[in-house]
Image (cartoon, rainbow, N blue to C red; front, side, top):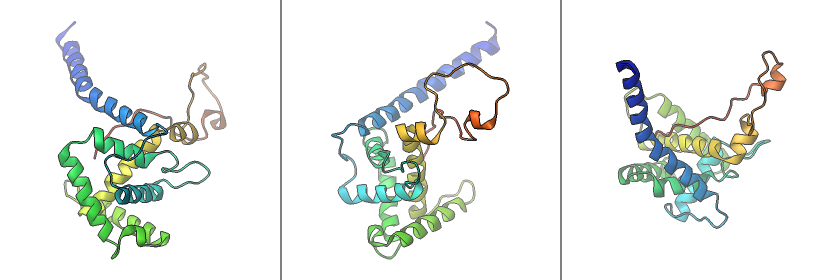
Length: 196
């Protein structure tokens, strides 16, 4: 083994040692959220309803299940309880409180159109922040919730099997096939990276 191969191996080992436990904790949180008897343990009932409403705006039910159908709010609850550090929990709850006041009255008291408009406005605001800048807490809440909603949804059974291409036992390789046989343009289910 030459020096270059050794360095590549050590780098891969270091990344695996750091990322492995985090990824395992995410999968544990997902498994805990899928239990039929699971109940929110981190969020209080009002916070849990708020997270559910926002995640439903991010991935609504269409011809496929939405985020709430896939158990995303409970996944997020378990993730904050078991994975995130106290500072990240505090940041999220502080941003949630700012978001809840951003519409002039509590978010859950707004009608559906007002809720969607507020989430859309704050999402655009967060995207407009220059690289390296920090969005306002309410916009930060929308972005964090969006990322966690997408993570939870695409780890779920409906997200992996009904939205992404999923083949539990991949078959033979075919060199040239029509798009209709190659998933009709859907992306393949892959491992997710967790960043807030």
